[in-house]
Image (cartoon, rainbow over all chains, first blue to last red; front, side):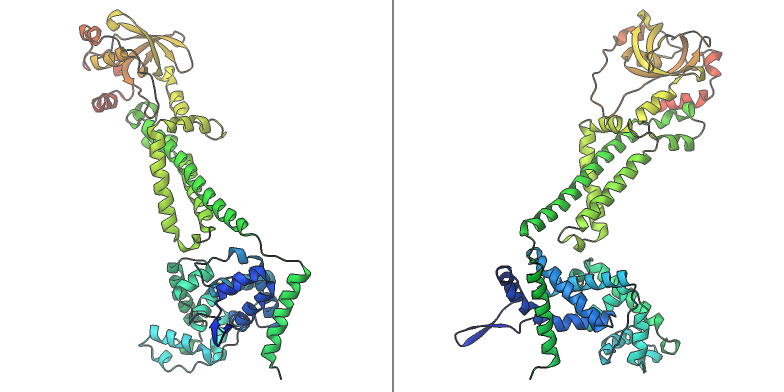
Length: 202
Length: 288
C-alpha cells in the first residue's frame, strides 16, 4: 500500500482515500491542505531522521520543518512520475545531509529491535559463518558499528532495511541510478560487517 | 485527551503553516522548474555540440599529420607523436562530455542514467556530429579559428608548415607557382612567402609528376648555398590537405612530364644521397 492514505474525502456514505498527489494539487490553491501531508509524513520522517543519526529531537523537528517548507515552495516542481513519498524522503534526506555537513555532527544512533532485518541480512550473506549465525548482537553494539559508517552508507542501509524502500524508490530518494543503489548497499553492508566487534566476525 | 504524538503533529503542522503565512511563502511557479529543466538539457546538448566541434578538429589533425615523413622532420617517433597528437582537442572533448554529463545529471530524471550511459551516449553523439562537421570541411576551420587563440597552442597546420620552413635542414614547403618547360626547374613560394627557384635535375619521375600536378608540395633537398634562393630538390611529396574544401590546382599536361627523363634512385647525385634519412625516404616514397 502506498504511504499516506489515512485521509479520506467523505462523499455520501463512502469515504474515499485522498492520494498524496491530490493533496498536492489542493495545496496549490489552499495552503491549509498542506497540513494533511505534514500529518501523513511527520512521524515517518522523524523516525527516518532519527535512524540517520540525528539524535536530538529539536534538531529533527527543525530539519523536518525546513524540509516541509522546501517541499511547499517546490510543490510545482513535484514530479508526478515519482511518488510523493519518495520526493518527500528525498527532501528530508538532503536536509539531513546538509545538517551533517554544516554541524559536523556525529550520528547518535539508537537502534532497537528493528535492527533485526539488517542483522538477518548480514547473516544471509555469511550463511556459513557460525559467529554471525549465533549472533547475540545487542542493538547498542549494532548502533555503535552503524554510527561509524559514512552518512551515505548509513542512509542506504536505513532506507533499505528500516524504511523498507525498494531499489527504485531509493534511486529516486538518493538521486542515483538503481545500479549505484545496489553497489551502495553492498558496500555499506561490507563496511558495517567490518565495523562490528571482532567476536561477531566470521 | 490528546496524545503527545498528536500534539507534535499539530505543533509541526502549525509551525510550518505559520511560517508559510508569516513569510508570505508561495510555491515557485511551474514555469521556473520547466525552464530550469530545459536549460539543463539545453546546456547538456550544447556541451555535446562543443564536443562534436572538438572531435571534428581532432579528426582534422589526425588526418593531416603525415607520419610517413617523420624521419625527415623529427629525430624519433616519440617526439613526432608528442608534437602532433591532438592532446588539446582530446582534452576539450573529454571536458565537454564531462560538462554535458553534469548538466544532464541535473535534469529532472538525469540521476537515473548511469554515468557510463550518459558518457557513451554523449561520446557517440559527439563522434557522429563531429564526423559530419569534418566531412563538410568544418574541422580545419575550427582548428584554425580556435587554435590561433590559446597562447600555448599552435594549429597543426601552422606547426607542420614551420617544420618545412627549414631550408638549411633541407626541408622546404610551399606552393608551386610556375614550372619551366620540361620541368627542369620550378618556382616555389614557401609558407613564409619567400620565392625559391627549385632545381629538379635530381628528381625521379614520380617527383616530377608531383611538381607537374602543382599545388602545395614538400621538398627534401639542399640549398645551393646558405644565402641563395636556389634549392636543389631530391624528393618532392604532394601535400594534399584533407577536410578542407579547396580549389584543385591546374595541373601541367602530364605529357610534359612523360617527355622528361627523371633520375632513378641509383643515379641521384651525392648531394641527395647524403641526406640523412635517404634510405627511409625511399621507403616512404613507395607508400605514397
